[in-house]
Image: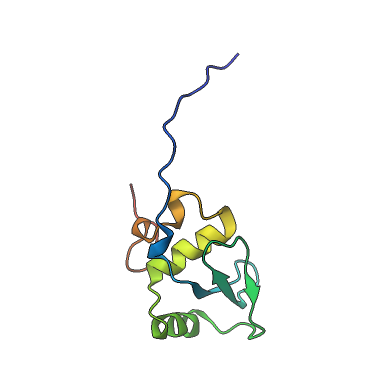
Length: 99
């Protein structure tokens, strides 16, 4: 029988650091999608594949950072109740920081 670990609970992320919505690229098709704060999954834009440059430009005009986009993409896949949906876990390029 395995011993149970008594790990402390993970800190709840502060969703106020995230925008109401952002644009991203579908992980499989590359199509442009909309991700909404607190919602698992995504919404189709109907725009097709626009590429990273276009998506980053749209987000930038909306005031969405690459850190926020990365956190929103994580949350839309895993859920918004884990530390990975905190933009502080990502660098300016949107890549996960080593912890």
